[in-house]
Length: 100
Image (tube, rainbow, N blue to C red):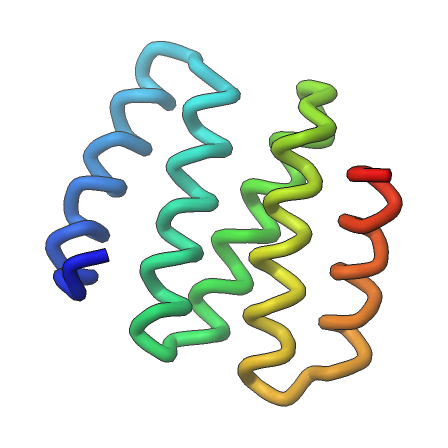
């Protein structure tokens, strides 16, 4: 929120390493989603999409429906931002279905 995205990325990377080391799959998914958000804020949409997709995969594997919805929202926004409108629509629609 302070615009210090690279610094945030450094911390999220550390968090990702720790959660992977201790086997915290939920924390891993959260760290990946946070990385996606930081890269999206930097305008690095392809990188953001890759992190959101990884987060989404983990959230689905562990059955975290709320986390799955949040990952889809981030993914949809990143798709929209880089002009991939149809993919953004699909991801956003899937998120809507989860939250309903």
